[in-house]
Image (tube, rainbow, N blue to C red):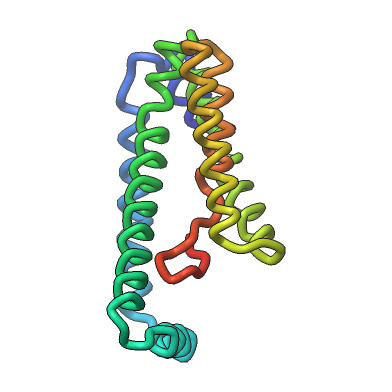
Length: 189
């Protein structure tokens, strides 16, 4: 929200000097976090949960070729799901401003503000998705989010841009950041 007002406002529209301070602040924050990790003694991770999960997988595998195929197939589709999910998430985030400007008719300032709304829905979707996992399985939630994203993508294609397309992208950010199922059936971020 600050960037939409400060960087893309009328008086700063064609100036890149304001952005250099943001990059400097991010660099300083990164170095500070790295130094904190370097000088802080971190506790050892608790591996009991992952060991229990590994033992469960081994128990479920009866050693048969069918069991091995099923496990490897599930891992492959889990990988493919994560690959497509991250690709879609990065693509929407990267090209949102271009889409809002070229297809939605928004100014850079208004497009940046709309991106802020999208990132807010992105965050809300994360918490809502986590809460929903208490009531439904991860694969079911993944299926619901996938169907919603596909329907919204079809809506964007049928709207042929405009402000409705930008709104659909914002809603996709909500469903796209909900929890997804890992290859082993657990919910992961």
